Image (cartoon, rainbow, N blue to C red; front, side, top):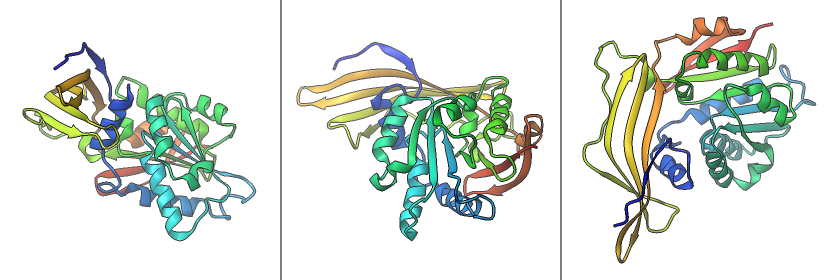
Length: 288
């Protein structure tokens, strides 16, 4: 067995890590938020709200490997909707994620999607690159806002949302995942698999992902989950370790409805909230 030098990484820094992410992250079978966003899209694109001559702009922020966009595409295909005059911006800060998303999307839907490298903390730059002025539907799905774990980042993000959201009719749907809510007990329970877990790749031949040494703590309302992840090629001569990664993921923990007062100072109006299976959707519009 060959051991490589360990590097500190997130889950997006190589094609192998993105493949592993796709294998373990929530998917459309376990989370049905895409159908919820599809209903929202149908309501918001009504001619009474949006003149048909103007394109309807959806921004899927933190798109990852394109799960939500693929879900929208599936919903459109089921009823024969061709996404007329609709443009979708799939935005992520990791190019490897965008590359995988572009591979995952249905060919019939590709002409409607632009994959854009950008930050949730600088949405104005994303819009300048896109060539569009404002967003009609902004989606930040399945608790992605928890990745904004440093002090001041959620507030800065909300300010950016207020600057790119279409005034009056535009809506931002920001999800708080149930698992990212602060626990009433001081002892925070971590899901820490014991021993070694091995997962086979579905796209890379003879590749297996080996994870172990799970650990974590929480400080100043930020959960830090760490584990080792090896990329292993299985050969006739034995296992060859291609990558050894020290994974670290920092996730902000939230109090219930904390986003509501935070948004008022960022130029947003709180519209409503809706419950999903594992999350709460907070809906905002831009202040005049």
